[in-house]
Amino acid sequence: MPQNRKKGTTPPIWVSQNFMTSYKIINRIIRRTTLNRDDHVIEIGPGKGHITGILIQKCRKVSAIEIDGRLYNKLTAKFKDVKNIRIYHQDFMKWKLPKFENYKVFSNIPFCFTTDIMRKLTECKNAPSEAWLTMEKGAAKRFMGKPSESLHSLLIKPRFDLDIAYYFIREDFHPKPGVDVVLLHLKKKSPPDIPANQWFAYEQFVSKALKYGFRSLFTSKQLSRAFRQAGVQNKNITPAEVLYVQWLCLFRCYWEHVLGRK
Image 1 (cartoon, helix red, strand yellow):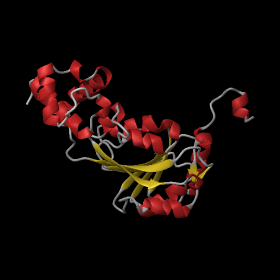
Image 2 (cartoon, helix red, strand yellow):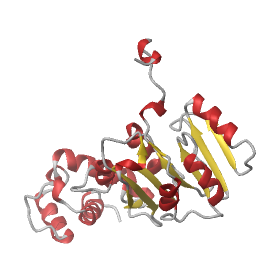
Image 3 (tube, one colour):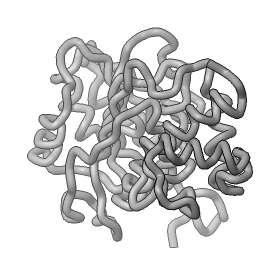
Image 4 (cartoon, one colour):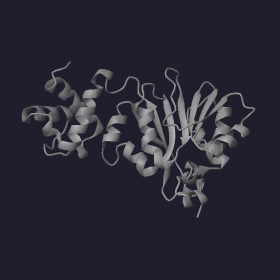
């Protein structure tokens, strides 16, 4: 049993992280991105620096945030003579993202923090223009609203387009994960599908609709009109069966005819 388990302390993050060590695979997936010499790229949890070494060749500036002290020390030694990298010994969830600067994110993130990291990147005031994150295939599908929309997907999709940029095989990682892994790509929409002045109402709308159904938000007459405009033919449809574009239309009907806004 590891010594830190004997003492009852929490093991370091890297113990539960699956690393990519093949430069062939790393180069292959980076070629799937739009990263270039003009970019500032943020890497969350650089670990042993395998991806980091390629990012510093590809991008103008690299910010690498590593929470584990042991790995941080190795990274600073490994890249001590590199001018275009800054390595932070910090928890990414407490690290401050750039307030005004345009940036992108590329990271092989620890799977146990996928939801927290996604929320931070997609809900911050200055979100990345693009991000590529390795994660469990099931988690990526849920963020994409497959097989049905969820609260997470409905709060991400108005601001980002999402697609799977790469499907890994389990042997691409060490140690080999027990789940299928993909590279999820997010690209910020400009403009977003929901304007900033409508965002709070939209959050309340989707939260309440998912929890209590559409009839909790509309009168029977309003709901019939909203369904007709959204192209929903089944009046007994559940929120889980509604497509994202239909959610947008239903919200716009709610905004105009229930809230009385224009």
